[in-house]
Amino acid sequence: MVVGTLRLSFVIPGANSLKDKRRVVKSLKDRLGNKHNISVAEVDELDEHRRCVIGIAMVSNDRRFTESCLSKIVDEVRGNPYASLSDYELELM
Image (tube, rainbow, N blue to C red; front, side, top):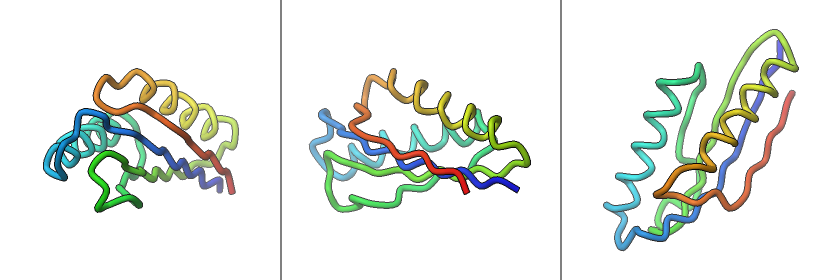
């Protein structure tokens, strides 16, 4: 069994309030969760309206498959027009 985790840090330049941030984060979480077989949650920077950190977890039986899927997610979120990816950490256990 392989567990892959991905921690994505974003800057949300257009957010002027927590409500604006929640709209962007919810859209991102819902889109990723529906498209990929993963668990998604906002894990840090909860009270900061221009930054967010999203945690993603994936379980499979193939290390290369897990790493490939999580890498594709990183590439996908780089193109988000409402949130700029500032950093990410990918870990396989």
